[in-house]
Picture 1 (tube, rainbow, N blue to C red):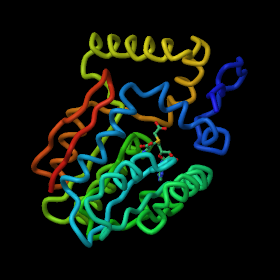
Picture 2: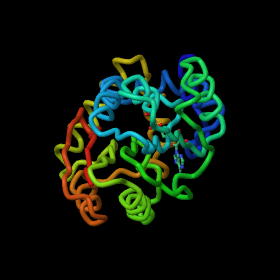
Picture 3: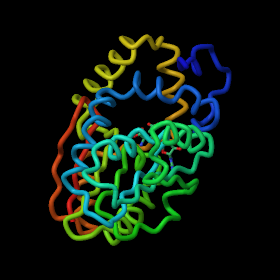
Length: 240
Ligand code: GEK
């Protein structure tokens, strides 16, 4: 279904929530809003295949419709793995369950409706935070990453994808403009772009790449490798 949520003028723009309305159009929304989303998803599977260890867990935190979990599933070298796909939005998990069912992946991918701040990561070889940490309050982010680090086995990886803010005004406005152009080219009107931006203002809180890297180091990750960037969307491999 095509995303038309912000196509009509709204007198009062409320904070963005991942509800039933968003879930219905999510696949179209993310594809038309996140430059490189398909590349990200397509490569999470092959990345996971390099790190996955038998008899461990893989976590997809903030899984939405499970695109990342399914990409991992499709590249599993063996089935001795459990993939936990977790999201606190019921509507997202319901759609995720349907797609997992269609892929006949129910034996491997287990879904959970939960806040990622309330889960304990255990015996993990891979933890995916694909565009999710940006929705966690800044003062909680270290706690989430610390718990991921503690739950990873040695050699395990946390893949962190974020929309970042650039450290200087010039590159920030350049990337804002390029991102806006990307959305316009994907058939979003100026009204849709500005209303969506307003609704995300207090919900999606961006930080610089430096801050993310420093935080990952501070919780214990020693090897941090940027593997993807398109404008202000960046993905890092943080290896334990
Ligand atoms: C993908 N990873 O397609 N606990 C659990 N889930 C949360 C929380 C939280 N505290 N906060 C937000 N979410 C996906 C895309 S979308 C990115 C991730 C975007 C969930 C929220 O419900 C939504 O499903 C997801 O994180 C963010 O690879 O919409 O920009």
